[in-house]
Length: 448
Ligand code: MLT
Ligand code: ZN
Image (cartoon, rainbow, N blue to C red; front, top):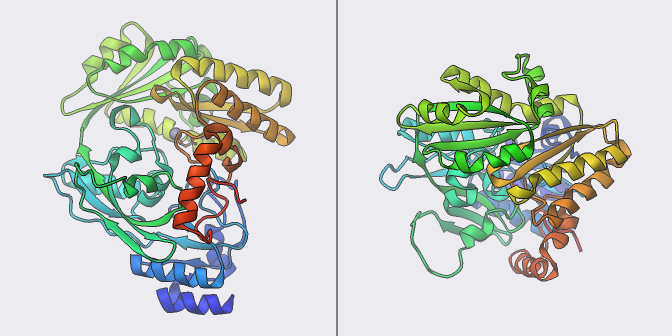
């Protein structure tokens, strides 16, 4: 190892190879304390050339590399395992000038989503992908997981925002595609291949991103629904709203624990409904009227200005509130919206049989049929519950990962979801780009 440390210091400088246990510890565990393992060192390069040097040094030493951004992942995709070196991308903080003509910007992989949003807003534009961990989650991590969040209903996932990347391949070669051309048919897109690849094919160092208009007038509503079916039934009316920006769903437990965590009175009594829909509209002009009209026929509250921000703060704090209660079994599934109710009923039935005392907290993104199923206190039943939730999602025509990624958490499941031919094709791509298995082994594809 000492030889490797010396080689890495020669590439990034001695201050950026962390071997001290106290200095490394924050990189060895994820924020929800689900995944923890030792790393021999954390390396913090600053340029694509330095990343290339790090990869070459690690390849020569036969040591794997785990790229890490803000470490807000939820599937163990960016924490070390089996003696791998952590490659922290946090020093890639460069933000280019916003091009208002093309509505694009280039951001370093370590720029946080919030920094990107503020940078775009200073130029009168906005970045579309948004979720609760925005202050810590990074652009590179978002590309690697194809992050989604709450505004997918309007703008799509990260995939739809990525116009180009700079990335370092396992052999140290650098691909730079940051021109941001909206139209180009020059073969398959390597850029898009890297979106959702979870650090297994290359290390993304910079990203060319699409920006969207900055809608400064917002209005939100929380609607009480008898059931999840009722919530799903609202979708046609919601989609008809001209300025619809987000449609989130909270089952009562989620509303309750987030409000309790924040120490605020729930805007509606969590016990009064079977599901709550949180709607956001955003426009260049006040969208309150369109939302008020929709609310006219529903039970709910309207929230404008500071009240809107308070309402969405509740939504943003659900994950933190769950984490404060314990170490959850956390699953991120999606099914066609008409099957959402079946999915939740199957989970509740399974929970009654397998872990009757466990606490179930379900919330997510209604328009995409994407639910975050969290179970606290499942104990020995965790594996059986995971099996139940993931199998049910697949059987209902859904997916085992809508936005968090596969990570190590669900690598063994990929073939059940996608089938052997699909996984063999992915393995062939991985084998061609990273024949030694240097990059993030065990993530996405199980180690053979
Ligand atoms: C969210 O929607 O808040 C995130 O996906 C985080 C989570 O699922 O806990
Ligand atoms: Zn989510």
